[in-house]
Length: 168
Image (cartoon, one colour):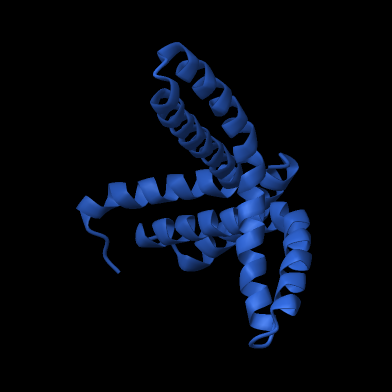
């Protein structure tokens, strides 16, 4: 497979982003989740408080408090949201038709289990996604697939270990 010269920078960027995602994907995702939730909460409180009291100072103070709360909550909600979505899918597959009580029970149980294990699942997901990006980038640049596969397996293990070690 011949790689066009114009495509080389794109594959290099893909490889570098894959390395970053493999080693620090869950930390970056948690950070972005926190920033996003803080922005949403701060903006929402600003709009409603200013509309209610027409006070810039009070709205700015409330927005600052909401941003601080949003930053902290964004860390918690990241794993909780992933746990709830996953539990919903699993409970939907395991509970028959119209048994809402069973669905709710399974949903609660699986949310708790997945939340506890989510740090490992999230780390594995980002390490796997990053090593896959590196694999695609390096093989597209013309490196031998067997060598790249060995590199990517090592990257997967090291990336997973690095992310779990940082307790994201």
